[in-house]
Length: 208
Ligand SMILES: [Fe+2]
Ligand SMILES: [Fe+2]
Image (cartoon, rainbow, N blue to C red; front, side, top):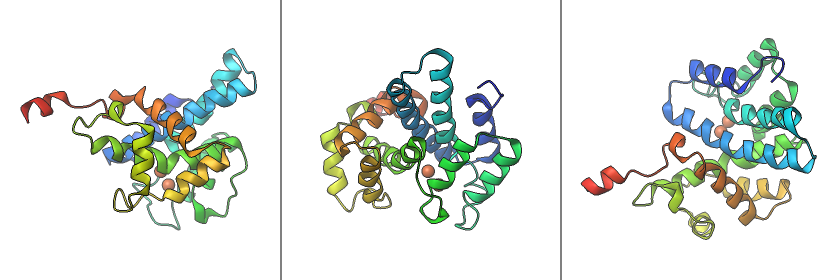
């Protein structure tokens, strides 16, 4: 991004604040999904070149940073408010800050922009898709299918911490069916399976 608030800088910041590697993986998973909605939005707006790249980067950064303060400040009174205050002081774009605030139900910040909606819609779903991959014998997200995800959504005992209504509500906010939303995020995460640690572990399967 022209003003120096880049994905690279967000990545550095995330790692400075986050010791938990599973939280870093969560950030990367959500980033993969929000970024894919940035690509869609750029196409819908007929943006090209640098303009498209800039919009897509906003979506990626929002995904990457939405929980960056959570390791240090997990309480409902601090997350994501402490992080957003820090980002505001540094001068990160307001659209990103708004989306980060709006991802938390209790923040009182309404989901207005497409980015606000996309971030909310991707947050729980990306965790759910990770859980779906990890129960596969291969532990590979490449073996996860939309129909299987929908089935698992009905299984209340599976990944019970993931709020199903946030996934369905998120799809609705984006004007998509649950199948479409799951399909979009699944594809986005499959494309970055290696980085997310979800490419499968054939070695350990072979070793039994
Ligand atoms: Fe959060
Ligand atoms: Fe999150």
